Image (cartoon, rainbow, N blue to C red):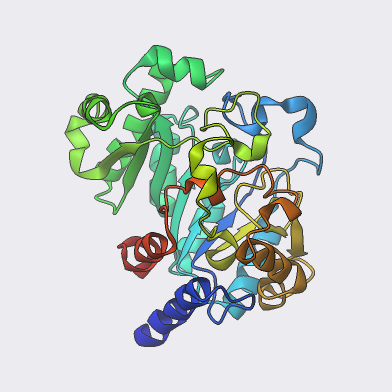
Length: 338
């Protein structure tokens, strides 16, 4: 069974490298949004523009619908890792622990991306006990930088929230980690970034084996945030096109069960199906998804609304700068083999 699962993901990687419109394999990453509201107004996030952001509604995915969606996914795919976030702050969902617990009971590894501002000691203990295994967050050792970028955020509260999570992981002897993208490294040289990350790592010295600090990379959020911290679209790199990986490896679901073409489509503008109405397999290689893949392979991102303003085809991402880098990171890094 393990070998079959391995081959399933290798075929996904080959489909991406061969630029196939119909993917042989299955999604590698599953992202499910249970709520799309946020208590922050980070200047680099589309949530900063509240007047225009919720064009396709706002809400919370019910636990019943969540279970239906997971059953749908598992009937079509081998689901090993699920990330419970997308646009909103997942901790605003007061029942998040129940969603995590359901996945854990199914043997699925659970992660979230959170601003970590809403974490009491008790909440942190309950989240880890439910089976939460990784939290990603944007943070740094410089309080002024943090609060300038994370509007409404209070540096001390976030620091304590992250520490609550780490204490909970240690107390329960759980397989639990925190991954921090150091916001202060934006626009810093590699030497400067190393020193900044060391300062952030030092804040969590007691749990050094549970904390990973990495440089931040701000994308242009499809041009929908109030401030664009990415490189300008006219940069020289725009002449070097790299095939976006999103429609080949990611399956992203919003609070209403809608599947969108990309995890950066935070306003659900390119909907390719709905898991409360269709099978996951039908959506994965459906016409709208293949149209998206075709436009990207033919170097026509401007023909897709959500892609025309995106910087990923010209500047790369955390996943890598070239297709081979991306495949190496997706299929040979430790996380996907869970």
